[in-house]
Length: 399
Image (cartoon, rainbow, N blue to C red; front, side):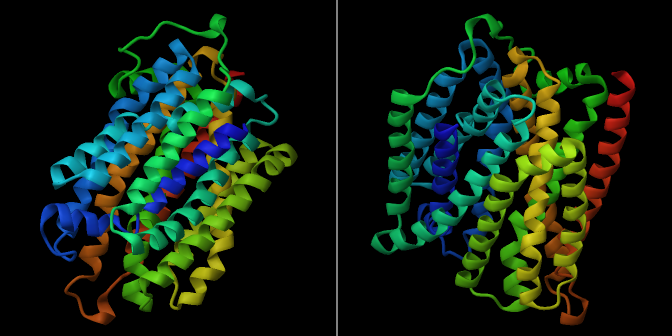
């Protein structure tokens, strides 16, 4: 668990390190101004999500066949190579190639989740899944701050640092990480099951729990409102500077790390995964509405702690699904979930930013609706709540 936690922290730190510099690197490699680089920024981001969508089920299936350890180490190697590509990239083409490589091997979260399922009991699975969210929160606090500092020594230095972090983690893992999936619990690799279409076709075998895949998708799709438009909301509505945005993201990361790392397991133990997930989804709904209706910047800070509790839902839903999945299918399950998350990361930014642009750009100030992505996201959460309750009723009736 310690290595898995460190892996997630380092991966999230690597992602966070490049955030301050990535727009400038896109501008440099595309030979355009930073303002003009916005037209190229989307393809760079989406290229990672598209490749992860395509390859996550494959990596999950391979981990069911060959074990978690080699696939997890391979993913760390792929991330290290990606950051080196970005460090040396002479053109935008090579920059996108690097992101595609990262997406192909971006199985660290998929395989880490399967690893956690292997080493966890039904009683502590939610708590252990919460460590993923906590590790990501910590990494997202450390990454942007470190990236902003390193960028002062050169635009590409943060990318070199991210590569070093990933490759050091590869060396560390090769020395200390033990295999979690015994030989007698492995199964043959099947490309029919281990591609996005094949993986999604396998959803039907989960019967009453199949709706939980849609719940996961809606949950992460709603989260894209914040990931995509937070900068634009805070800068356009409240006049925040990039420094203000960075501080706010750090505070959010700290809150999420505390809730998922320290409280997810306790909630699950006291009230169960089902109620924990419901609480997280309901809080998510009200937090999104609160952000959308906020009329002052301090209100966003007041909502950060409640928003952090939305992170209870993800680990609880994943635990319910993992607890009802065979040991030799955990990698496939997590690969399918990762593909759904990647699909949300492809659709979400395009949807949320398109809606934000439609309701703000070239409109009079009194007609601008800065909170439009958050209102749309709240509808997705309502759908998730309804489907979750239906899934739980079906599951109870089948037992």
